[in-house]
Amino acid sequence: MSVLLETKAVVKQFGEFRAVDRVDFRVQEGEVLALIGSNGAGKTTLVNLISGLLTADEGRILFRGQDVTKQPVKERIRAGIARSFQLVNLFDQLSALDNVALAIFSRQGKTRRLLTLADADRPVWAEATEVLSLFRLDAKARTLAGGLSQGERKLLDVAIAYALKPRLLFLDEPTSGVGTREKAPIMDTIVSIVRSEGISAAIIEHDMDVVFSYSDRIVAMHQGTILADGTPDQIRRDERVLTTLIGTPEPPR
Image (cartoon, rainbow, N blue to C red; front, side, top):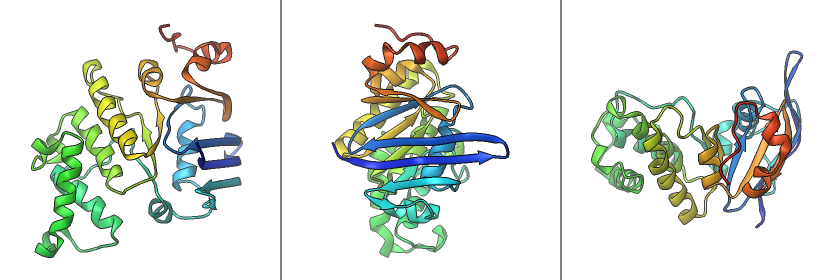
């Protein structure tokens, strides 16, 4: 597989605290990667640097061979980097369909308000309906986002990111706050879609069952640095990971 994204010696410092410390990180074309680590390890900061929500103090970020280190968020989205959020960021007073349609209009550079959209934009609504169907949310198309269950809100958040047509999709805790029974259906849906579409996905996740069940490769961070990088089997046997990630039980063999 070829490298889709690569960071080179990336640094982010907040006062005296170095949240990301000269990190070399990569994502391959078409892989599902898990990014793990205890709270404060630097995972979300690294993703924020890659997606453009933060600016690196040092180092470079390359996406498809192009330097995007200084590009704003909109340019990175246009290049093909998208993300979902741990704290779901939806328009609760709009329907699920409207939320997805807004992402499509944004992708197309349209700025008109939803209420003024005319029949000429029917292809957008058709695409939004297809996206909801793909994420098994078509029955909830007219439901206000605020009225969805937590699991449905998580799926809708990912569906919105997917509607931006990314090449690389970051998923921040896609199963947090949902019941145990909901986790597998959510991940089955997401991973099936990204694999079938050839999208690379990087998942920030604390649930080790999810991590070891769905990822091709696992990167473990600790104190702003990369602690380990390998296949699930390699990480499962890595004593540094098992002893450093306090409170994380060894996954079942």
